[in-house]
Length: 297
Image 1 (tube, one colour):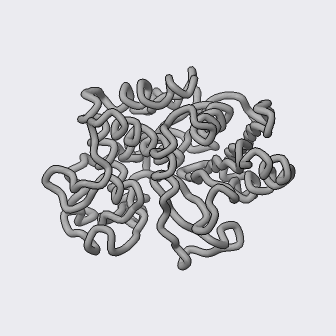
Image 2 (cartoon, rainbow, N blue to C red; image 1 turned 135 degrees about the horizontal axis):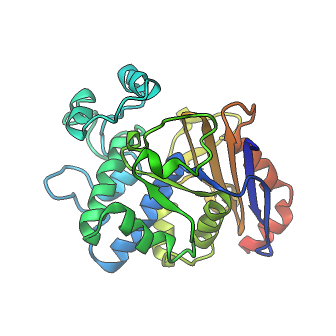
């Protein structure tokens, strides 16, 4: 089986696919899905974006922008050891204890730290506000409106049986505590295309997604002017003039899904492939920069 997949939606809306057509793990592109679901519930009036959540010091917007002060499990050696050993995911109570999640690292809004736990809490509020299990809430709020037929939330190892995992055998999706969305790369591209072309959110809601926190300390060759919005990685200055979207990675593979204007490129690759999916996506988007720029006008 091929170990790469690339989907490109050009400025005319034409879809191009290279590599595998089946489902892949979306890893942290799931955060963009969660942010869209949250904003759709805000539009309905069933969630508030800026008020402190019940019993908490932080708001939904601060969770979605990684500004809530919550810890993360990405740096825990025990977590990675158990994942590698094929162990069952920890109960949430153990996860919270291991990460000392009851102790905020900074006052909400006064710092920034990437937190999967923050997105786990956001996902919990989405499910509660929708009155549905998270899988059903995401299907109704995001996948169906975007016209996605083969994208879903993976809950058990059996849900990954038909998913290209890049050699990561026996992985339990429960290790992604905010939920692991899986689906074809073409549907990841279609989702972001629906978002940037106005098919999922009202203009004012989309503008809130782009309200990013500049992160100059995160500068790199790929991200020279980084910022983080609500579930979106973007440029701090003129975000609509540069690629916006999200990357993600986990055992065996990584993914990047980015838009520039109305052009979208999604790239998934197995860990054995020496390629940076984000750099590959940026390069493909830049191939027709004049067309992308025109689409913004």
